[in-house]
Amino acid sequence: MPAHDWQKSSFSAEAANCVYVARVPVDWQKSSYSQEGSACLNVAAPTPDAIRIRESDDPDIILTTTPAALGVFIRAAKAGQFDHLHCS
Image (tube, rainbow, N blue to C red):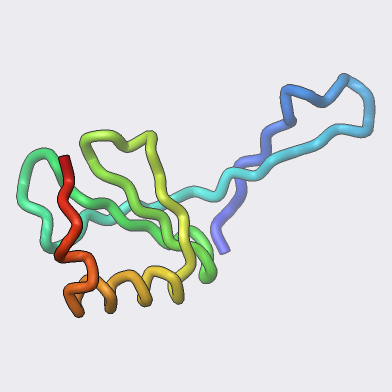
């Protein structure tokens, strides 16, 4: 398990009853299907029960899911269940 970067919540007072939040370091990996340049898909697994996905063009927007849910989504995409959808 990676080391955590603990930060005190900005809502905590200076007393002993503070709330701390841990940020788990994330090692992002570029998808092997992404070309060089922009519009790359980055994937990370900071814990065994979490998968994070982001696009390199907008890295502040991060989708977090479970390995099981991501597997269901990938199988559905491979089966063509989203082929009727159109992005604008």
